[in-house]
Length: 405
Image: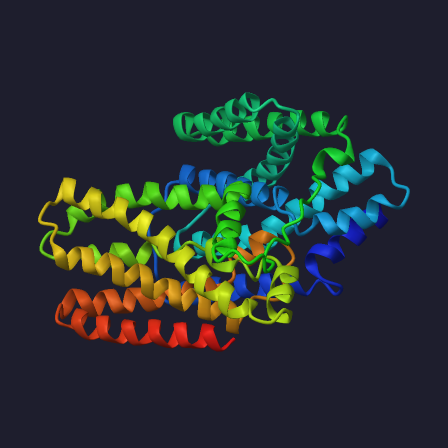
């Protein structure tokens, strides 16, 4: 079991565990910076427990459903291994990776921004560990077709944290959940966590002008996590107009459009598949063809989400005019162009899991640029005309570049 754990740890954390070191350093810097700024707030303990449980569980699920680490499992399955030891080593390493690289920075913010008793911190860490074990067991249940059981399990844990709000009850529920998860995983097969990766190499010259766009659409539909992220943005688009009701007198419409540009999976299609990127860069004429249609694809996805936001704004606030429609078009097109340029010029390298890719700091560059533009547009509406002219120039340059490739 130790050898399996060590091999998996090097796959996820790096040969010298550099990923864990970077995460620990980032958490320490975040804690010190927040504490030095004397930013203090009151946070209920059930919020800490709920975040520790469900944020960790969501990231753990994201890693389990990812495809990148399947390649490492393929190599390990070629060697003899003990089934039960492999399952527990696999779940333990994935849980440690989730807690150290993703949950630890969240804990650093919570622990620096509010005062906690030692046992409350210990319970929060216990909730994170429990979430990893329960998510792994729930993932196997879903693979076996028992989808209702994990949902009821998660609902029960949530009910204890939200309704009971008692440390002893949370500890009891967590201990029982870990015990049940361990007993369930003890009878699991290592191949229950292995899914065959379907070939995604579909961007080839077929003589059909829309082949790339069809590929991207099928890619989105085939990867449920990408689709769920887009559906989540649509839900946020419905909620934002209602939230902005509390800020009367301020033009927050462009701010909402900037927030809805944060569709990380759609904007990292090249980074998530290095083989696909290599095919596009090697074959002549593929770069221009792909980037042009990739930009159109992101633009259409942005337009769908922004259109829902526009409709919600009209229902709640009213007063939608041509200016608002123009903002929707400008924000959707500008974020699409910037996302494609970033993906082509600066793809993300060296990531271990899809969760690492989607939580990379680069994901915030385009939304940050859009937020700055939203602040300018909200203050000076006349900037829209200048921005429209600049955007037309960008489209012309993009079309010229794609023809030259």
